[in-house]
Length: 281
Ligand SMILES: [Zn+2]
Ligand SMILES: [Zn+2]
Image: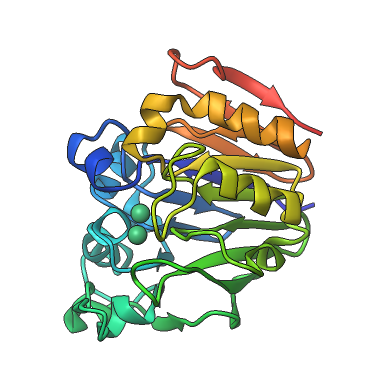
């Protein structure tokens, strides 16, 4: 039997004001499998929090960047340098949205320089509805509807334990649920609480609809904006759970999800009610 995937939520904040205030960290998500070591959406603080959590960035073999907003990309270049062992050798794979690699007519310049794009062994342009393999994980690129029109989400298919996925920033749209149907674990970027919609982003109400359609074993609300944080993410998670019957939790910084035959969630934040080890299944 293979080893579990460890999904470490180094950052659970999203949006400008959460980022500026660091009310929640914006360091992205580290995903570690038996040989996979991936940093997903390394926003501001990704390097510092990796090092502080003893997650050596030189062990990375994949960096994923979903779109051109700073809370998703700012530390990407320095993590690419780490992945390439101080740029001493071509190493690892960079997976990034088209705008991240090339810029776009929507007003975004490339956010990873050409110089840094030469450091990984492989660069994959993440186009919606394409898939590719990284180690033994089948990655499928999912669609979004966001202010960076090239923004994408990711679905990770493991051979042994089924799928988990990350929506990235998106508003609800017809058909979004099909991208996540059958995943066991769904990480949703829920910037806004119920009743406070904002174009291009997800509210708790939208999360309800997506979770209803995908019906995972566990849904995790993350990438929390300021209004969401003030509203109380745990309350919002409860709302999703009540409406969908799917076990739903609000992410906290440093939360570790062990994804295997069983999904375990461990939090170290003593201020949260979700403290301690929770077992699912
Ligand atoms: Zn964001
Ligand atoms: Zn965004």
